[in-house]
Image: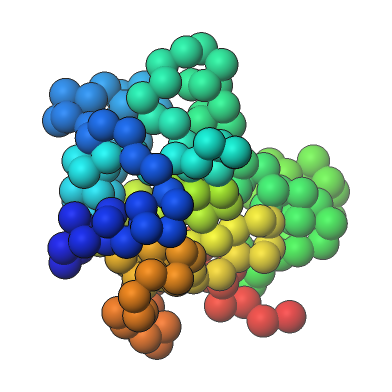
Length: 190
């Protein structure tokens, strides 16, 4: 990300509040709890503070280590796969997954096998997620609710500009990085 401090300042001007920054020790603790690995761009952003709003919890509250909050964030990490499974059980299927089984339980079983190989998604805000991609410092951000899955930013900075209307978008939506599993859903046209 270019200037994280400038982006944080712009978000604050839009009414987004920030708690204390995450230390390297806290980042590692969170990654262990949730079995995730923050991409470099997200680590850099969180090293400047954790965004939050008073009225809702659309940002994950990474530093709340209560059992209920940990359960909530784990649920948010699993939610895109659960939403997509509901779409799959209602007839959604893409050619990359092979032939669709005829029986519901076989459909579910095959989908679970396929989705287990998909990159994990890290919640950013509401139903916006950043995929965990090996050796990728700044992956794109996607918005996903079942089959309604789209790119929402070419990277974290582009996403923040788009979502919170700060500055101008820094890149085009052309030639976005391929995300295994998720890009196939994004690119599928009915």
